[in-house]
Length: 594
Image 1 (cartoon, helix red, strand yellow):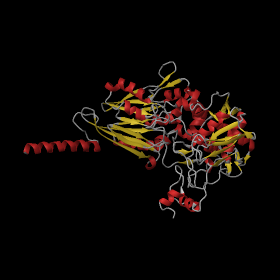
Image 2 (cartoon, rainbow, N blue to C red):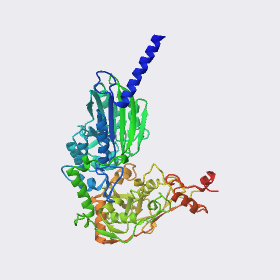
Image 3 (spheres, one colour):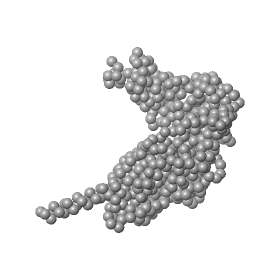
Image 4 (cartoon, rainbow, N blue to C red):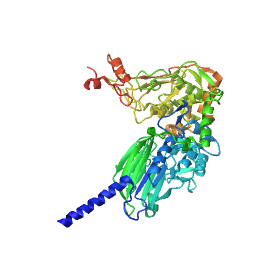
């Protein structure tokens, strides 16, 4: 009995020592070089180096690589064995990169920041392809770390990026497999022509079979979400397929959809983070004497709690890039007080977008507004097309009364798209319009607001100029576009037209969804943002113009309770009805109204 008690006591001491060793970083056993490994991962930073909103000329309070640097430095001060990786979409996303440094040779502020932070590897995201092959090559040259994409090759079969890298910390070998998003051609079309892409799951399986006996820990850094985005049945673009085919993966980093993910599934730790450097994924692994994982934990760390680091903000080149970007928008500094002028190239006579009637429901997506009419007007003017389609990328997009600078334009047109002119038939145009109108939820009796399908983000909803039309929300998806008029008469299916759309929409919808058979007949030499700037410079003063060429029908939003319910939403007493309409019958059942 005494021997049994002794054995139990010894066992408890061993367990306690293992557990406390994991928490405190003390050795797990004699002779071990690494008893604890910390993996830090970032994703979808979208060029936010400084922690700054250039279109607003404002510091952010919870984002940016400068804050990430503070957190990474603190972890490295506390932990001996740390690995830092990035999961892509890091090189695109603001005026500093998209309008300046992505279009020139030489050093790049994002790559400088990543090198300063000492990343061990990065995976290419789909937005890395926005600027074509030359920028991909430039990233690879500038990075002081491996750039990964195991499921991408050149069309001639040669390697386009490294499939994996092996990082050693304290005698523990970590195999890092990188997987880019195979849908890149859908979004960037000809810019991806030099490359071929394959499904993430089988690509991961091929690489893991090669490295499994060379490493102690397998980590996959994949620029896809957990669930497939387009290939629901095959799963070629979803991380679940990686786990299905490669259950031995120890750590899986996901991204692309800007969602927080914090999960331990079996023996696999899965992490994802919000965009712009808002969050960092932290994974702690405890290792036994045989270098196997004996415990695991995951945290998603909010950067709001960290101040920007001088490692980034004190770097001369990054300071120069930051100030050059502000000068580009606002004009160079004048006077001893550092005030700026000279960046203004036009004036808005008054604010363009109407105020939202319901908090969180953008008026710009439920009726025709001046911002969309301006964008479509400029697209028609520059392309010479008959019809134009464009999206309101952000629910808050607006042109405020007063001076207009480049930040204003970035605020209403976030991406560096070029413009295409494409031949279409009347039937094809209506099919495209139906695809767009799928963003709305169908109206049902009792609904007093219009809501949106959460699976159809705003950048997938286009509004059209050059035709008059109605969207009947009493009808299901695919049967909503009614009474399409072209030049005063009903549009015939056989009518031959030309359509102005951006390069992204051409690839991601017209071609990917097989909506249009024809190919583009013209491409602009400059970006749509540049066209907007030139148009406003010509006008000098712009006025909001709305032709009300489209409207929503098939709804009855009236109710004696409507004003009361909307006030509850606007006062924050009811949730914003973005994904599900306010319905009087439902609210009555819940006791909200009597």
